[in-house]
Image 1 (cartoon, rainbow, N blue to C red):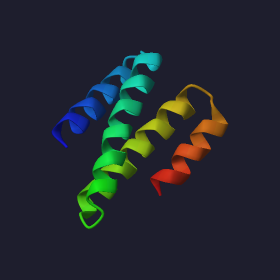
Image 2 (cartoon, helix red, strand yellow):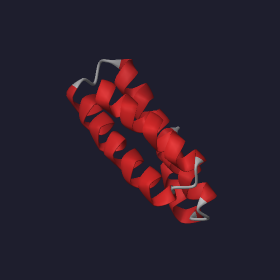
Image 3 (tube, rainbow, N blue to C red):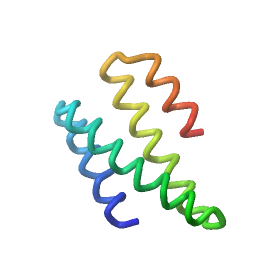
Image 4 (cartoon, helix red, strand yellow):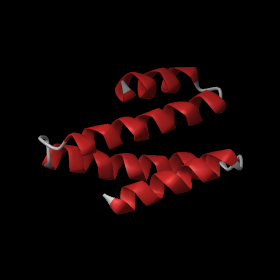
Length: 79
């Protein structure tokens, strides 16, 4: 849980500093961890919420990169 949070925070910082490739890679790592946590703990709403946050971050990164199709898919998963 804490590793995924740290990776998401790092990804947000990387995105803010226009290091988009690194931000996307780091976001996808956090997303994979959070997907596993949500799958292993389906009754815990914190993991589903965190998963939505990671998808939202990925959607924002895709939008900044002009990748509309990927933005739409990530945004759909976030909500």
